[in-house]
Image 1 (cartoon, helix red, strand yellow):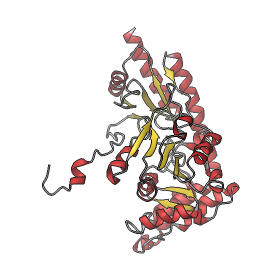
Image 2 (cartoon, one colour):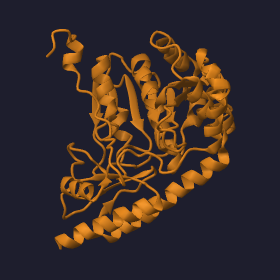
Image 3 (tube, helix red, strand yellow):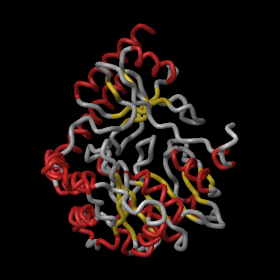
Image 4 (cartoon, rainbow, N blue to C red):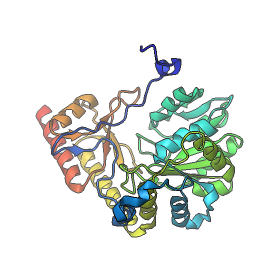
Length: 362
């Protein structure tokens, strides 16, 4: 350990992001990126910022991110939101980092699923938050009864869950909100647009509910870094207070312009998400035909295992075929592969490679 390191740095176990290999002709299905380019309107909006030799880049962006907040309000007009109920940040990971600081540290522990987004325990380590991982059922379903009578300072879970892809309904989320009315309940909706129902409607009935979303997945802007949270103004104020102690300008001018335009392009959004969902169902059927067990997914990925083949070995053999999927070395899920939904051509390449691998092993 370097003597310049603080005790905190020595204790940390950092998050391991999905691999970003620099290989030619790679079928990359490991980080749940959207396989299609973003909305042309988003690209045009960013180009407009760069007009006149990029003179606008000499000025700081709006610290409140009002352009994106207003676009979120318009997109979710059915929920009668106000900009005071919206917080924006540099990707949902930054939004979540501020959420953990501002809302999730209490005397009682933070509750989360045992199989979930692996960044959550990392944030807890960074901010010294006591947490309890509540086991999902045998079929990887979040059972609300397992949360109702536990000591609880706060709760967080993805819906759909990651890496399983399984989702729960609004009625079940509301059960949790009612069971712990004084505990912040954070629903991480990174993948909600691929088949689940947003819980934004609950924020008007439950002041403890906060929804977090990203533009990385269903808006194909993983490289831009933009995310937001929706909740009661008091929760948003807490996030803003922490943000302004850390970074007053989290979203730059390009990100604000591109993200707002992406939220406005409803036609592109609907076409894109339905294309991904159609590919997901086709791929699931193909994997089942190859003997895989595939969990029901409401996300842009599948979680699957082959009962007669080791998942780590399969991932390595796919890599040798220049196809990258995600393998987690964690209890309960070490025999599963998480497979991002690619283009139809990429999914077909994956199926062909798996058929070859499984055929050679027969």
